[in-house]
View 1: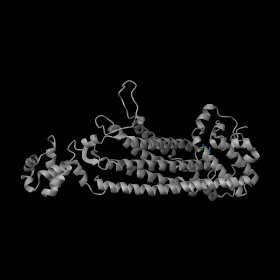
View 2 (view 1 turned 60 degrees about the vertical axis):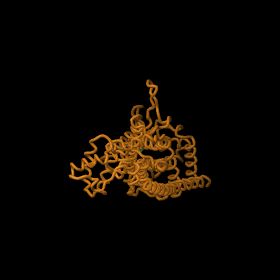
View 3 (view 1 turned 30 degrees about the vertical axis):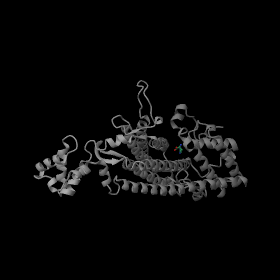
View 4 (view 1 turned 180 degrees about the vertical axis):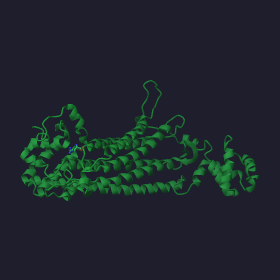
Amino acid sequence: MSDILRRGRLASVPDEEIIEFTSSMSADKWIFNSDILVDLAHTVMLKERNVIRAEDCREILKGLLKIREEGIEKLDHTYEDIHISLESRLIDMVGEDVGGRMHSGRSRNDEVATCIRLTLRNELLLMMEDLLALRNTLIDVASENVDTLMPGFTHLQHAQPTTLAHHLTAHANAIGRDFERTRDCYARVNMSPLGAAAFASTGFDLDRERTRTLLGFDGIVENSMDAVSSRDFLIETASVFANLMINLSKMAEELVIWSTSEFAFIELDDRYASTSSIMPQKKNPDTAELLRGKSGVAIGSLMSLISICKALPLSYNRDLQEATPNMWRSLKTTRSSVRVMNGMIATMKINRENMAGLATAGFTTATELADTMVRVCDIPFRTAHQIVGVLARGSGEPTLGEIDAVAHNVIGESLSGRGLTEQMVNEALDPTMNVRKRTVTGGPSPETMQQLISNCKDRSVGDEDSLKGLKANVDSAMEALFSVVDDCMDA
Ligand code: ARG
């Protein structure tokens, strides 16, 4: 059949290069299934509003289900997009007198916006599930390591003793916020633009509320011009993903550093490693490096999206077609990164002795020593900071005698004279005691960590419930849609 789109207005046909340049077919594989659902819902609604006859509706629905079954491969890929290719296939199947009625009161502008939102909301549900799994893994590994000492870092320099649980739950909390941001943007994604048509809605008596319900959207994008023009939901989602990927890239960076011979804190499972084609001994943390690199893809996708959408006049502009694939690229990269990170954390071997062995390297207990001087000797913290700072110039941990000598120089008297004992100094220099004393909310003491972990678990349960609720809404809408479709075909 001749090109159902161009045969009226246009005389010459685009050559291969122009088709390649203008077509969205390759990215449209993401929205093939959604497009069928949108077509089904629109067709049912058209029949209910008496825009099309029941028998035409039946034939169209049958055709759509057939096309769904055949899959995207059966479609003609020389059309400029999935919508027109799908409609053309339908018309091939059921004839133009029937199939040619499906697009009544609709434009590809509201159609594509609806398809993107439908696909994206389903993907966001999967993403939320993966984020919960990653957070749970971090919490599980943390709960096994509330007593695992390690050095904490600032500026990547040894700073203060902490525990692996403290470190991992920091990442778990960040991933928790990524979950919340994903859920927040889900609320703005899951809105229906359908019925906006080209931009000015339509003179057909459509029921936008009906197609919204049939497709499981939580609301409609009310203004029909806004409905077809806005892609801020893509920018928002890509920004949530870029943020998430930055969080993952930080974890990946640590996995890379912690795998070095210098640190040797962890060993990644072999499945996440590669070796060298020349150096037979190498075990490289390639998967973590790639994840670190892929964060650039998510950031780049966001940059592309915002640049493409900037300064577009209302309403639909074809530039928007160029925006969408960036969303899919970001989504694919981000989701697999979340899953791969989960696997790496769950299977990594933790070298507890090496971690604990380095917990005091670089005089990480200096802060606690200064704090002890403040508490016991009643000197200002700034003075204690100076005394310990001078002591830190020496090598190794200071003795009470060395402390007194420096104190004499700084304040003109010894600290043992102000009640500081050898035992107090030893305790201040003990990394386990350092950690145990840090019982302030969110600090690394084992009890504080147990509390934080239990809070995290409670939040996970709450988040799982809210995710279940969102999924149930979508599932029941889909069930209802197909039962209405069945009814229409039986009628
Ligand atoms: N492939 C197009 C897109 O992704 C679909 C909408 C085309 N609309 C149009 N008026 N040419 O945006």
